[in-house]
Image 1 (cartoon, rainbow, N blue to C red):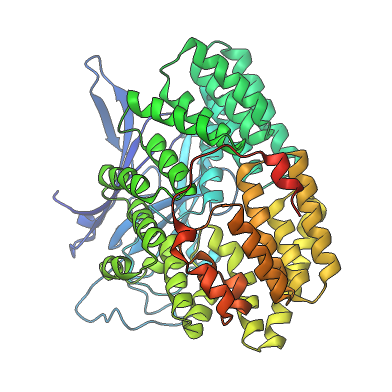
Image 2 (cartoon, rainbow, N blue to C red; image 1 turned 120 degrees about the horizontal axis):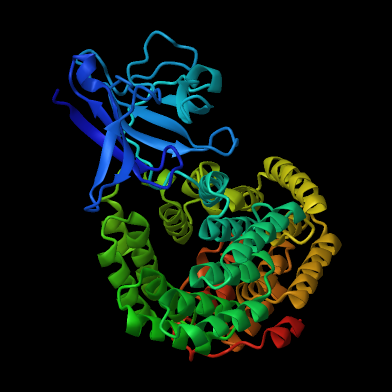
Amino acid sequence: MGRWGRGVCVIDINNDGLADIYVCNTIYKDSLRRRNLLYINKGSDKDGIPHFTDSAREYGLDIDLQSTMASFFDYDNDGDLDMYLTVNEASAGYNPNRFGGAANKTFTPSRGRLYQNDWNADGQHPVFHDVSDKAGVTREGFGHAGPRGVSSAEELHQQRIALLSRAVQLDPRFALAWARLSSEHARMYFYGFDRSDARRHQAQHAIDRALALSPDDLAVRSELGNYYYYGLRDYARAADYLEGVLQVAPHHVEILVQLAWVRRRQGQWIEATTLLNRALAIDPRNIAALKALAGNLRTFRHWEEALVLQRKVAALRSDDLDEQIELQYLVWSQTGSFDTYDAWRRTLPGDAVQRLPLVWYMDLGRAAALRDFATIVGLLEAPPARGAAVFHAKELLALVLLSKGDRVRALELAQSLQREALTELRRQPDNLRWLERSLVTHAMLGEPQAAWADYERWRALLIAQPDAFDVESFLGFRTSLYAMLGDRDLALQSMRETLKQRRVMVWGYWAHDLALVSLWDDPRFLQMANDPANNAPIPIANWDLPAMLKSK
């Protein structure tokens, strides 16, 4: 029976280590020809050819709506992947611009559906059940969404943890799955999504199991390097370990890139750049190496070389909008002009600002350059659903509202953010992003002693565990803190000192920085922020992190 397939999702739906295929069908009036298909991978034959069986009915996924795409994610945080189905029924009597209320259950031809994954012990596979009403998925839509770009970084790590946990449950001797499970737990800890001891212990337990099973496997040993890096933030130990692996496998590109990441965190930019060039000499199309080297060059404002590398990445991933946006960001960083970005921006779909965090960030920078406060506030009130923008948008909104005289709303927001930060810091006292929020809100609420105490606490944490990226953020933040506390002269003095030390800055960054909104009308500030000399390339050099942290 012929069907009109609209969307395809490849996923290991039954956690057997094999990629299955889910096909969404639409168009036909005959519901039998709209039933979605689920091809379960039964493995390969003696000739290496995989064989599939349609099992949509057994899994509860033989759905006959006018579906366009499925997105699999863990909506109820129970460790398995549920499914959201976008639906688009373009019937003659349906106006896609007409939307009903959340309680309208009669006019729902294009309402998306949410399906919960429930394990079927008899069949030894999941069965999906519609929980849309229960979960509050009741509004009509006109869905064209796909799985790419939907999940936040935290959700992606959680999804990987769910899959890898299932893998080691099915095969407790699967050493590489244990090793990669350790790395995902460690990344959850490193990026501040969960800084609990329990999370780090999970990472340690998983890597210990992996090494007990396969101590000589290079792939497993690579993940041990990740545990030292992400789980312990012990960059010296990670570097020593990875150097040892390279003694055995000197042309292992993944290890070269891994070690380069560690060297960057240590402030050893020269060594990191050398390692990445070694990796690219072996594999010129390696995306991780290309992106990391472009990042190194961008740090020292070597714009032309960074653009060459990012153009390669964009060409290799021509269907990846995130990489195209990175290219546009680099062009703006070099020139300070939004002209190229604006031309490219007009080719994007209308929902790009919500789906793609860097588009939101670029739109925000353009609005700041134009001093368009209405657009700035609008963007900050509706940040994208993923990325760092979500975390910082409310802080920036409070700062902008305060600068425009809306003190009541700004201070209410700052107080709410401060309560949240203090609650999290009691649970995760070394979480830098919550410490930064505490610092910012103390400054907005006119509490300079508390703000500076947070700043010195930040310094102490970095002295104990230095990290080049965090040190750079810390030192650059001093100017912002003076500005938020209303001390314009000290903010400008801090800015001049930063420029003398030739630290990182991109063209106009300060001029568009919302944390410095109180300085935007000062000619001294604008002269420094817009001076092309302050965006010229500087030599790639190693950083003495302890010395940098001593500067006041």
